[in-house]
Image (cartoon, rainbow, N blue to C red; front, side, top):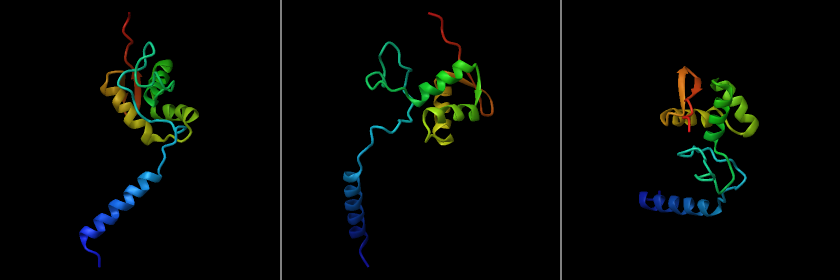
Length: 117
């Protein structure tokens, strides 16, 4: 049997080799929420010209006035076919923490009022 140190070394080598083989696809959608929605061409998605999942979810909820998770998920699957509930729930949690949406009941959300300028 191989020693623990030898197994650890081989595991590290295998992980390093696998890492070198993995090339991230630029066509895959990101499932991140930016710290602030894009404004005036600024923010994380400004240069890429891509809208984050959080921005899409927020826009959908604002357009409807309120929405539940199945409605949000159905809409998001038209924009990002591979997305599942596991990609939506953390986004909704982050939007709630930032005060951009309110959870009005289990699985139902309403947008926070947009400040007047």
